[in-house]
Image (tube, rainbow, N blue to C red; front, side):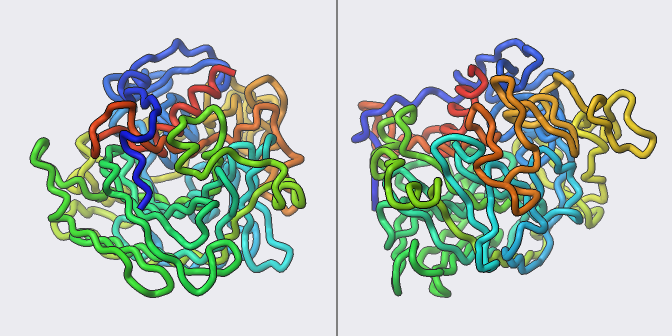
Length: 464
């Protein structure tokens, strides 16, 4: 097992300190914004706290919206309930860019950031990571349906190379997390991990062995079987790790530090080996990314391939508050199992100006049908993380003032790194801070690495 802990001489900033330093809203989601986190909730005019610790409307209020730091519990849009499906990832059908998704899970299976491509043999989806452009932060597919306990299986080939990380995870809006992560310099290993509300002890990571070939050249099946009292990780049908809820009881706060809230499935490829990342992150990822290596030299990008994702939903846990079949909502900011209710609440916004408390808000002068004209869809209110004024079906402007193609890489086979934006930020980042601060004690509880790194990267993007 790779354990960096205190041995990695990197400075991990306090998550609450960073999140608490709210800058004033400058009306541009890329050049300035309002942050949210511990001790700092979003204001009423930008009520939704995104996955990356920034406040806004629209997509900020959909997948990844954190109810704990949003203005109110109902600022976040209700989340679509689990759906048992076998998702064959053989085409870009069912994948919608985050600039166009409004919460209707019947119209899309996955929401994309970055540049996903269809494989030439039509047998899988390729996630790309380029040195710049739309996949400069990698590529992410997040499921539109949430899972509140279930068996989730993904068949994939990882990327390879120093600094390049592939991932198959379940991530809840309050940052409960279940992980398979793959470092590109170790093609015989899958790293397993779990987190409760974004905090972790580094000893929770365990390496699992991938036999019968390697993770890059050969298809392997990775499975998470998530039940209310037990969680297992399997590779090619063989259980390699078991976690019981009872073993996660924390005597300090008298809570089970066990993933227990509805989660999206996330498939991703991201750049851990960047100079701007912490030394611990780069070391964990096997070093800095080499953009002259075989794969980016031949293709223009690193890549990972996903063939299939199978979801078997389990029933809501015993004693759950079930009054419907359509959506999950939070009824308490404590973010534990008992705070979830299953309801018939709607999950769909009318436009990217909407929020959970104003689902029907639309752009001024919108056409009577509800379809926004290009002129009406321009807005300075942050509605998609990393973009400004991105209306459904219209182009959004990325940081730096250039225009990005809202459909590039996700809406059609024409999508590629060529349809990029000047910042090279695909509206997300999954940078991972591995290791503690110098002198930190082994097993020190800190903010979840990948989410903390995402926050730092996102705030850095806001300053561009």
